[in-house]
Image (cartoon, rainbow, N blue to C red; front, side, top):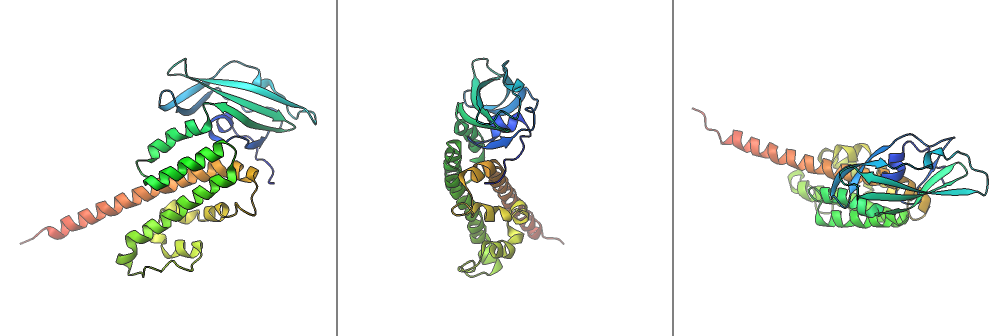
Amino acid sequence: MAKPKELSSLQELFFDAPLYARYSVKTKLPNGDNFRGYCPSCKTDSIFKLRIHNFRQQGFPINAGAQAFHNVTCRCVQDDAHDVTFIIRCFEDKVEKVGQFPTQADIELGNVAELRKVATGEDAAELVRAIGLAAHGVGIGAFVYLRRVFERVIRRRFGEVREARGWPENALEGKRMDECIEMMRDHLPDFLVKNRRLYGILSLHIHELTEDDCRDFFDVAIKSIKFILRDEQRKREEEAERRELQAAIASVKLG
């Protein structure tokens, strides 16, 4: 298993990371009292304030064989009745989130609701499944759904531009994903083309990545997929506007 990355912020630990994603801590936890996240009760993005407790006084490393658990509560600034509570485990020179309420899935689903504006029904449904699995510590299963969304972007764009490019229906058959992306680079989201290595990482899940590896990378993976979907939508809108303008210019009769 890869060495846990160093914890950069409490925002990452509380609101961004799935359960059981481990981080290393040198001597003390990062500072920070205000965090951004989706409030399932308000049904909107909000700021959460850290309530007073001794969590940040926890020293590292902890003696071998020992561990400490902390209940940490953050309160929504929009309503004092809306709390998010995290159970944090500290051991050796590491820290991980082992429980929370509302769940990580509840918090992440607010972001997915926004994505429904740009994602197809199938993409959104599989993002929901990936988030739910990751929220319960099933990283490998979550990767399967993220990979399916990635592949669907390629197939969808191929179907949209195939006739205009004169490609046969089976043009992608037998090609590695890297070759498919290179062939279609002018029609794919820029972020996808420049970060095609993401597909390779998502494809390692069965034999080469552990559950811990997948959980540790899940936040980066799903944010990348979301960015690709937004990028795809922008590209489609630009192409539609370009066609409209070209048609308008072509329709003008001079003289």
